[in-house]
Image (cartoon, rainbow, N blue to C red; front, side, top):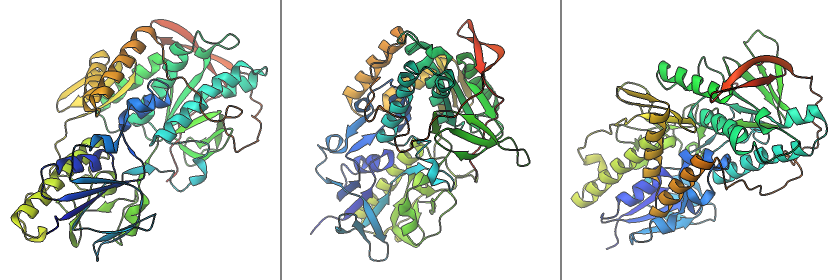
Amino acid sequence: MSLPHVIIVGGGFGGLTAAQSFKRSPVRVTLIDRRNHYLFQPLLYQVAMAGLSPADIASPIRSVLAKQKNVTVLLDQVADVDLGRKAITTETGARLDYDFLILAAGAKSDYFGHAEWEQFAPGLKTLTDATEIRRRVLLAFELAEREADEARRRWLLTFVVIGGGPTGVELAGALRELSQYVLARDFRRIDPTEARVILMEGGPRVLASFPEDLSQAAVRQLGELGVEIRTGTRVTDIDAHGVAFQASQDSPAERLEAANVVWAAGVRATRLTGKLGLPIDRAGRVSVREDCSLPGHPEAFAIGDMAAFTGEDGKLLPGVSPVAMQQARYTAKLVTRAVREGKPLAELSHEKFRYFDKGTMATIGRSRAVAESGRLRLSGFIAWLAWLFVHVWYLIGHRNRVAVLLTWAWSYVTYERGARLITGRVDAIHPDTEQPAPALPAPTPSRALPTDGARQEERTSEPLRSPQPSH
């Protein structure tokens, strides 16, 4: 008699945790992912900013599950799900039947109906995204070094990050540190410290999911680094030259010319949720029942970024890794119990899923961060140490932990970043566009900004307000 078959779609936080949770269960597991590696996404921005190498935050899925004999890993992508017949079809044409299904395919960057913006403003969800952003950022400094025209140099050294959530804040802080400290001594014809980093947020404040005092602490720490923060406006267009935006619905459109724009404004569940034949919300998430199962299909579950799960406070659970991992353990435990007791899940009495919130944190730069856990709120160096400990602890694989810790220790002491590699094309930031950079007006002086005890002249060209992606 064959063991019940569990199919897990996705090898991220939720999918991999679910597979590991079946280690001692009387089931056979098939994990399907279109990539062969597990990725520790919270540190992806470090790869994009040349702080870590891709291998430091990624591990082969087969290696992680090598000792778990009841798991088979398939490098493939699910094309369709037939909930009625309890079967999935992959892109390669394979059809697999299941007894239980766990959907954990994650999310992708959401451009709110403007897919054409992606080529000019890459998101940050994969290693490919991170290395492409790294290429564009480092190449901008290289092109500026050989550029004789002052206007083009300013354009090349202007960086815009759209989205004031944790990812946007981390990217902006790391970008400023890269130019302020890491690259400051590497060039002869340009001064990398003159690079502008603008963080744009459509809401009234950055880190809106954090308490207001921590949001203000983040603004203060970003200001110390020299990051320009613009809130309360929305993006109307992005092209190879920069960003167009409005300060309000009735205000005229303005532009900021920038060679590099990075998107950190929103995410959307993968397209697989649209193939389930069930209602999905604006973010593409499918509504699930209180045990994370799909309505009308107690043997099929959706977890993590794919699922719209309403918590006890009446709000949807956030798309963060602890939610996906806790849901993965819960569903695996539920399936294991049903198999061992020989009962259909629909007849199994069980408690609903409850999310235990351990807190949230965001790093802003070297020795700068904000963190919240219950009533405990931290900012600055102590919050950064807490952030460092948590992220290193959750890295999979002993080698990864040691490598990351040593890399960070070396970077902290020396301000060196050994992953400053430009891969791919080096002739243009936007290879698919041949448009020349626009002519820019001369900069106008403004107030000085403090930067780690020293005051540095802020170089601005025109007034700027932070945009919000158009919904």
